[in-house]
Length: 131
Image 1 (cartoon, one colour):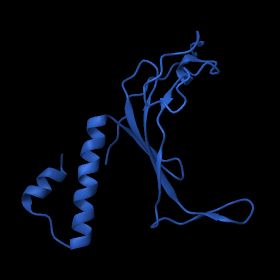
Image 2 (cartoon, helix red, strand yellow):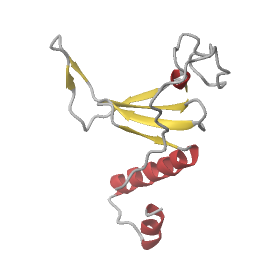
Image 3 (cartoon, rainbow, N blue to C red):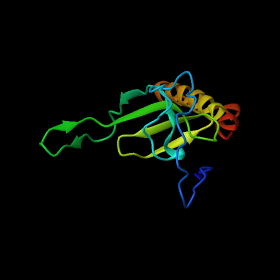
């Protein structure tokens, strides 16, 4: 499965010139005045985190374990459109447009149903899954 990244990478960071206007859903909501570079003045929503029980727990330095998890949040980088980020416990993830996130949500619900029912996909479902 191929993925594409549309993030702009600059060789020299742009100095921040003061607070930005945060999105209404930004967890900080203060304009990110302590960031030194404009590229770091990112809005991020409160995250939704959940345990991923099919993955191994993480062994911590103190000998305890932490269950594997994933998180979802809204975000917006300076000069870019808002996005939805899905990140796993090992910092693997994907950044989606809102429409891509809705498609993913529909697919997750559909395939959860398929897994629970043990039902083979009909031809129409296979075509939908290929989108």
